[in-house]
Image (spheres, one colour):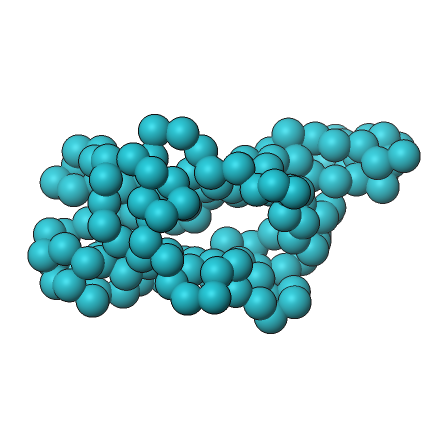
Length: 140
């Protein structure tokens, strides 16, 4: 029986220049202690230190463990996240392998300096409760 522990993986803020077509990337490392089950994704966007909704930028996520992108092309954030007021659900949940990386690429489609952060909400997946607790004992 698997043991799930709630956890979020967040990218660093990615800064995009004030030019249409400007790109930025961030690498999000999945820790080696457990596989990760992503249930939701949120994207925060700020311009001049103010959070904004309805940003017209694009995003792509590459899963290094299987060498696959999550989308066939970089996709407009609004296409799957609307105004950003609600998280995007993965249905079914997306599983990422322990000790792998997610490479997140964002593209600015507006002529405004923009910062973007991508957050995956879900669970670390341990083989058992004993495996989870063994990790706790190792850090004591």
